[in-house]
Length: 533
Image (tube, rainbow, N blue to C red):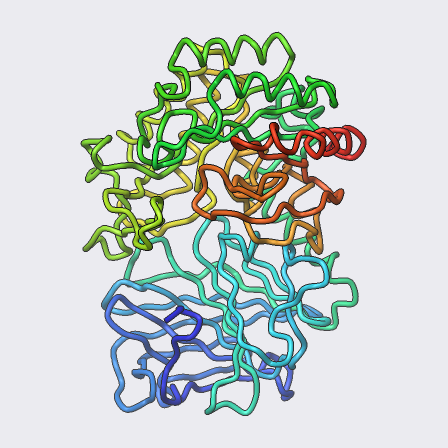
């Protein structure tokens, strides 16, 4: 069962309180979760006066028993703004804190990266947005003239969940804040939560939120970023050259990749092309995290010839590296850096695709945390060796848009150290990521848009103000729509439409140019006219 469908089967009997200076329909409550249980505020031990709430004892959800713990909550009102400052305490470490809001109405919600024409919760349907991730690029959302945001200076899980439980007279809007598992304590201060109503132009409130995000995560405007090579500003087309599948099937050898670049650059200026190389290291994912040119594709000599050919044309090359993925048979020290669950008691086994078609996930694949110094050093040294030996222009990191609450190593700090060391060694190297969200865009100026997410963003400035994105690895090839080394199989390639901040992509597998060269040429010519970021 998906987590969004999991719920209490009883009324938690939360005490609700009015907003300061109001006796209207909007009311709020707070729940506190430890590593052992969930709690509401005990009504008999709670006092709320003049915007300050003091709770000296908690109640188990449902109110059948009381428990130790408490909260101090200040609710400040300034005009149309209401801000919560929530401090909670318990004998056990605090795992999450939830603000519940009733009476905000039944209008659908949208986030800054919601697709244009899309909305969440239409028709009263339950929905959930999780930050950081593909659904929620920054913890801000709007519904009609209402906005709700979290002003968190760190990257921590925020969850917006809207539903109408059987015990409630109307919809409940839940905003859940999840502390970093690496810093759980029995006393915890939630970052400020801001509710605004009667907001006639939600984009203005989003701009205010983004101003906070810029300060918190040191985001720089795209035009002033020092980690954007000058050549990237001219790129109008990304060419995905699929190498070797997990099974060993070869889509393109290194000589075939060079020929594909010669063909494409006959229809668009070479300096406007970035060639992206998934599966260049041999069997895709199977050989992670060993990053050397695949023998079946031409080995080191063939890779040298490819990089020489690209350099002669003026095309930039971006090989793919796994930000997390590893085959335990390829990396002996995997236990030191493998992701653990939020209590640190077991290994999180994640992303185990069926690579060979037997309808079961493959074994031996684990996800590692680049926050762990040993694995991060391995990644830095692997990328650095390819840059030094072959002169590639960029490094793409697979899966880094995923976020994990690993109690041993804070993930975003690991990303920051990874990027910082690579830029120290190779100041002109472009770093790119799979997926994007606010703080991640500050580290990786180029990303792949999450597969399956509408690229026509409702408020594109959440991306375009800081970074650029391009189509996903799994965007199908011209013709049958092969996703190449990816596990998605065949997916029809979408029509080319100019989107703010989005660089067009064309993927090339084994039969793409022999059978569909005219379509590839047409895509390149279209990108020449429409693809500049």
